[in-house]
Image (cartoon, rainbow, N blue to C red):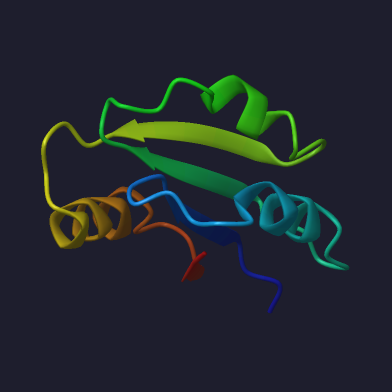
Length: 88
């Protein structure tokens, strides 16, 4: 079937080329239904990053001081109703 697709984008550590990756993500033949940014509270440019995803829903999941593995686990739980979850 054509299940719902979510993409998780950790913002810590910040990936080089993140803006280009987001533009590529938005240009996919089958765009994601939702992009979830994992924010540890240190990202100041979230709205600018979201602007690179026209037509794609996006949310910010505040992770506090969690480690990256803990934040990823929280995202998987948060997206349990999506058929496909992938990570950038």
